Amino acid sequence: MQQQPYTLKKAFGQHFLKDQNIINKIIAALQENQFTNLLEVGPGGGALTQFISTIPGINFKAIEIDKEKVEYLSATFPHLQGKIIHQDFLKSEVPFEERFTIIGNFPYNISSQILFKTIDWRLQIDHIIGMFQKEVAQRIASKPGNKVYGVISVLIQAFYDVEYLFDVPPGCFNPPPKVMSGVIRLTPKKEPIHGAGEKQMKMLVKMAFNQRRKQLRNAVKSLFTEEMLKDEIFNKRAEQLSIEDFAALTYKIGK
Image (cartoon, rainbow, N blue to C red; front, side):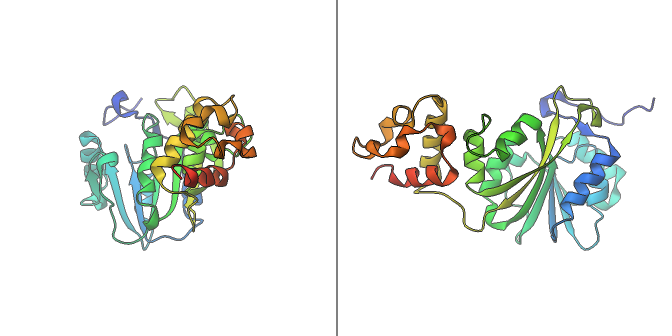
Protein backbone atom coordinates (compact mmCIF):
# COMPACT_ATOMS: atom_id res chain seq x y z
CA MET A 1 0.00 0.00 0.00
CA GLN A 2 1.38 3.37 -1.03
CA GLN A 3 2.20 5.66 1.87
CA GLN A 4 0.35 8.95 2.01
CA PRO A 5 2.58 12.01 1.49
CA TYR A 6 0.76 13.98 4.21
CA THR A 7 -1.02 13.45 7.53
CA LEU A 8 -4.78 13.58 8.06
CA LYS A 9 -5.72 15.93 10.86
CA LYS A 10 -8.85 15.25 12.87
CA ALA A 11 -8.83 18.80 14.28
CA PHE A 12 -9.50 20.14 10.77
CA GLY A 13 -12.18 17.53 10.05
CA GLN A 14 -10.15 16.11 7.17
CA HIS A 15 -11.88 13.39 5.16
CA PHE A 16 -10.41 13.53 1.67
CA LEU A 17 -12.33 12.48 -1.42
CA LYS A 18 -10.79 9.59 -3.35
CA ASP A 19 -13.57 8.21 -5.57
CA GLN A 20 -13.07 9.30 -9.18
CA ASN A 21 -16.72 8.75 -10.16
CA ILE A 22 -17.89 11.15 -7.44
CA ILE A 23 -15.17 13.64 -8.39
CA ASN A 24 -16.46 13.52 -11.99
CA LYS A 25 -20.06 14.04 -10.82
CA ILE A 26 -19.08 17.08 -8.76
CA ILE A 27 -17.15 18.59 -11.67
CA ALA A 28 -20.08 17.93 -14.02
CA ALA A 29 -22.43 19.71 -11.57
CA LEU A 30 -19.98 22.61 -11.32
CA GLN A 31 -19.79 23.00 -15.11
CA GLU A 32 -23.56 23.11 -15.58
CA ASN A 33 -23.24 26.84 -14.93
CA GLN A 34 -20.76 29.25 -16.51
CA PHE A 35 -18.19 30.99 -14.33
CA THR A 36 -14.89 32.84 -14.70
CA ASN A 37 -13.61 32.94 -11.11
CA LEU A 38 -13.59 29.82 -8.93
CA LEU A 39 -12.77 29.50 -5.24
CA GLU A 40 -12.18 26.11 -3.67
CA VAL A 41 -12.61 25.97 0.10
CA GLY A 42 -10.38 23.38 1.77
CA PRO A 43 -8.58 21.74 -1.17
CA GLY A 44 -6.84 19.32 1.21
CA GLY A 45 -4.94 16.68 -0.77
CA GLY A 46 -6.07 18.07 -4.12
CA ALA A 47 -8.49 15.33 -5.27
CA LEU A 48 -10.78 17.94 -6.81
CA THR A 49 -8.19 20.70 -7.14
CA GLN A 50 -6.04 18.96 -9.73
CA PHE A 51 -9.01 18.89 -12.14
CA ILE A 52 -10.93 22.09 -11.42
CA SER A 53 -7.82 24.30 -11.30
CA THR A 54 -7.04 23.46 -14.92
CA ILE A 55 -10.48 24.16 -16.41
CA PRO A 56 -9.70 26.35 -19.44
CA GLY A 57 -10.40 30.07 -19.18
CA ILE A 58 -10.96 30.32 -15.42
CA ASN A 59 -9.21 32.20 -12.64
CA PHE A 60 -8.74 29.70 -9.79
CA LYS A 61 -7.96 30.29 -6.11
CA ALA A 62 -8.12 28.04 -3.05
CA ILE A 63 -8.23 28.73 0.68
CA GLU A 64 -6.57 26.17 2.96
CA ILE A 65 -5.95 26.47 6.70
CA ASP A 66 -3.48 23.56 6.98
CA LYS A 67 0.12 24.66 6.25
CA GLU A 68 1.19 21.09 5.46
CA LYS A 69 -1.50 20.78 2.75
CA VAL A 70 -0.57 24.18 1.28
CA GLU A 71 3.04 23.04 0.95
CA TYR A 72 2.00 19.64 -0.45
CA LEU A 73 -0.30 21.17 -3.08
CA SER A 74 2.28 23.78 -4.15
CA ALA A 75 4.96 21.11 -4.52
CA THR A 76 2.73 18.54 -6.26
CA PHE A 77 0.91 20.88 -8.62
CA PRO A 78 3.31 23.66 -9.66
CA HIS A 79 0.58 25.54 -11.55
CA LEU A 80 -1.00 26.30 -8.15
CA GLN A 81 1.89 28.52 -7.08
CA GLY A 82 0.41 31.83 -5.88
CA LYS A 83 -3.16 30.54 -6.12
CA ILE A 84 -3.46 29.06 -2.63
CA ILE A 85 -4.41 31.35 0.24
CA HIS A 86 -3.08 29.96 3.52
CA GLN A 87 -5.82 31.16 5.85
CA ASP A 88 -8.84 30.21 7.92
CA PHE A 89 -11.80 30.59 5.54
CA LEU A 90 -14.00 31.88 8.36
CA LYS A 91 -11.59 34.82 8.84
CA SER A 92 -10.84 35.48 5.19
CA GLU A 93 -11.67 38.48 3.03
CA VAL A 94 -13.59 38.16 -0.22
CA PRO A 95 -11.03 36.63 -2.65
CA PHE A 96 -12.14 38.22 -5.94
CA GLU A 97 -13.22 41.69 -6.99
CA GLU A 98 -15.61 40.23 -9.57
CA ARG A 99 -18.33 37.58 -9.27
CA PHE A 100 -17.20 34.04 -8.44
CA THR A 101 -18.32 30.47 -7.80
CA ILE A 102 -17.44 28.45 -4.67
CA ILE A 103 -16.79 24.73 -4.50
CA GLY A 104 -15.67 22.57 -1.61
CA ASN A 105 -15.68 19.33 0.31
CA PHE A 106 -16.41 21.38 3.42
CA PRO A 107 -15.05 20.23 6.81
CA TYR A 108 -18.20 18.93 8.51
CA ASN A 109 -17.40 20.52 11.87
CA ILE A 110 -17.68 24.05 10.38
CA SER A 111 -19.81 23.48 7.26
CA SER A 112 -22.77 25.54 8.55
CA GLN A 113 -20.44 28.39 9.54
CA ILE A 114 -18.94 28.33 6.05
CA LEU A 115 -22.38 28.85 4.50
CA PHE A 116 -23.28 31.65 6.90
CA LYS A 117 -19.98 33.34 5.99
CA THR A 118 -20.89 33.21 2.29
CA ILE A 119 -24.09 35.16 2.98
CA ASP A 120 -21.90 38.23 3.53
CA TRP A 121 -20.46 37.69 0.03
CA ARG A 122 -23.70 36.71 -1.70
CA LEU A 123 -23.86 39.72 -4.02
CA GLN A 124 -20.68 38.46 -5.71
CA ILE A 125 -21.47 34.73 -5.65
CA ASP A 126 -22.88 32.96 -8.72
CA HIS A 127 -23.20 29.44 -7.28
CA ILE A 128 -21.92 27.20 -4.51
CA ILE A 129 -21.35 23.47 -4.96
CA GLY A 130 -20.70 21.98 -1.55
CA MET A 131 -20.25 18.60 0.11
CA PHE A 132 -21.80 18.26 3.56
CA GLN A 133 -22.77 15.59 6.03
CA LYS A 134 -25.95 14.22 4.41
CA GLU A 135 -28.11 15.10 7.41
CA VAL A 136 -26.94 18.73 7.27
CA ALA A 137 -27.37 18.90 3.47
CA GLN A 138 -30.94 17.61 3.84
CA ARG A 139 -31.70 20.19 6.52
CA ILE A 140 -30.34 23.01 4.37
CA ALA A 141 -32.50 21.90 1.41
CA SER A 142 -35.62 20.96 3.42
CA LYS A 143 -39.03 22.53 2.79
CA PRO A 144 -41.68 23.58 5.37
CA GLY A 145 -43.64 20.71 6.94
CA ASN A 146 -40.66 18.36 6.84
CA LYS A 147 -39.40 17.07 10.19
CA VAL A 148 -35.81 18.14 9.36
CA TYR A 149 -36.91 21.66 8.38
CA GLY A 150 -35.33 23.96 10.93
CA VAL A 151 -33.17 26.97 11.72
CA ILE A 152 -30.55 26.39 9.04
CA SER A 153 -33.23 25.66 6.39
CA VAL A 154 -34.85 29.06 6.95
CA LEU A 155 -31.71 31.15 7.40
CA ILE A 156 -29.95 29.75 4.32
CA GLN A 157 -33.04 29.62 2.07
CA ALA A 158 -33.78 33.26 2.87
CA PHE A 159 -30.77 34.02 0.67
CA TYR A 160 -30.24 30.94 -1.52
CA ASP A 161 -32.22 28.55 -3.70
CA VAL A 162 -31.00 25.10 -2.65
CA GLU A 163 -30.91 21.91 -4.73
CA TYR A 164 -29.91 18.52 -3.28
CA LEU A 165 -27.82 16.81 -5.99
CA PHE A 166 -26.64 13.37 -4.83
CA ASP A 167 -25.45 11.16 -1.97
CA VAL A 168 -21.80 10.26 -1.35
CA PRO A 169 -21.13 7.04 0.63
CA PRO A 170 -18.43 6.92 3.38
CA GLY A 171 -16.18 4.62 1.31
CA CYS A 172 -15.54 7.45 -1.16
CA PHE A 173 -13.31 9.19 1.40
CA ASN A 174 -10.01 8.63 3.17
CA PRO A 175 -10.52 8.09 6.04
CA PRO A 176 -14.21 7.12 5.68
CA PRO A 177 -16.47 9.32 7.83
CA LYS A 178 -19.04 7.59 10.02
CA VAL A 179 -21.90 9.22 8.12
CA MET A 180 -23.27 9.55 4.60
CA SER A 181 -22.46 12.74 2.75
CA GLY A 182 -24.44 14.80 0.26
CA VAL A 183 -23.67 17.38 -2.42
CA ILE A 184 -25.91 20.42 -2.82
CA ARG A 185 -26.00 23.43 -5.12
CA LEU A 186 -26.86 26.90 -3.77
CA THR A 187 -27.80 29.79 -6.03
CA PRO A 188 -28.24 33.26 -4.51
CA LYS A 189 -31.81 34.50 -4.81
CA LYS A 190 -32.20 37.43 -7.16
CA GLU A 191 -34.23 39.10 -4.43
CA PRO A 192 -33.28 37.73 -0.98
CA ILE A 193 -36.22 37.09 1.32
CA HIS A 194 -35.69 38.93 4.56
CA GLY A 195 -37.50 41.33 6.79
CA ALA A 196 -36.21 44.23 8.83
CA GLY A 197 -32.81 42.69 9.41
CA GLU A 198 -30.77 39.50 9.51
CA LYS A 199 -30.17 39.65 13.28
CA GLN A 200 -33.87 39.91 14.09
CA MET A 201 -34.69 37.07 11.71
CA LYS A 202 -32.03 34.85 13.24
CA MET A 203 -33.39 35.56 16.74
CA LEU A 204 -36.99 34.86 15.69
CA VAL A 205 -36.18 31.63 13.85
CA LYS A 206 -34.04 30.26 16.68
CA MET A 207 -36.71 31.04 19.29
CA ALA A 208 -39.43 29.48 17.13
CA PHE A 209 -37.58 26.22 16.52
CA ASN A 210 -36.24 26.01 20.07
CA GLN A 211 -39.82 25.12 21.03
CA ARG A 212 -40.90 23.66 17.71
CA ARG A 213 -43.75 21.59 19.17
CA LYS A 214 -45.43 24.62 20.69
CA GLN A 215 -47.65 27.05 18.87
CA LEU A 216 -45.62 29.98 17.61
CA ARG A 217 -47.61 32.26 19.93
CA ASN A 218 -46.03 30.59 22.97
CA ALA A 219 -42.55 30.21 21.53
CA VAL A 220 -41.98 33.82 20.43
CA LYS A 221 -44.45 35.85 22.53
CA SER A 222 -41.69 38.02 24.00
CA LEU A 223 -41.00 39.53 20.55
CA PHE A 224 -44.51 40.77 19.72
CA THR A 225 -47.34 42.81 21.22
CA GLU A 226 -50.47 41.08 22.53
CA GLU A 227 -52.43 42.58 19.65
CA MET A 228 -50.04 41.12 17.07
CA LEU A 229 -50.17 37.70 18.73
CA LYS A 230 -53.92 37.47 17.92
CA ASP A 231 -53.01 36.91 14.25
CA GLU A 232 -53.87 33.36 13.09
CA ILE A 233 -50.31 32.71 11.94
CA PHE A 234 -49.31 32.37 15.60
CA ASN A 235 -51.56 29.28 15.86
CA LYS A 236 -49.03 27.43 13.70
CA ARG A 237 -45.84 25.65 14.76
CA ALA A 238 -42.43 26.74 13.48
CA GLU A 239 -42.10 23.91 10.95
CA GLN A 240 -45.36 24.99 9.27
CA LEU A 241 -44.09 28.48 8.41
CA SER A 242 -42.53 29.30 5.06
CA ILE A 243 -39.41 31.41 4.61
CA GLU A 244 -41.71 34.25 3.51
CA ASP A 245 -43.78 33.87 6.71
CA PHE A 246 -40.68 34.22 8.87
CA ALA A 247 -39.56 37.24 6.84
CA ALA A 248 -42.93 38.94 7.24
CA LEU A 249 -42.91 38.32 11.00
CA THR A 250 -39.35 39.60 11.28
CA TYR A 251 -40.46 42.88 9.76
CA LYS A 252 -43.05 43.28 12.56
CA ILE A 253 -40.59 42.84 15.43
CA GLY A 254 -40.36 46.04 17.43
CA LYS A 255 -43.22 47.71 15.56
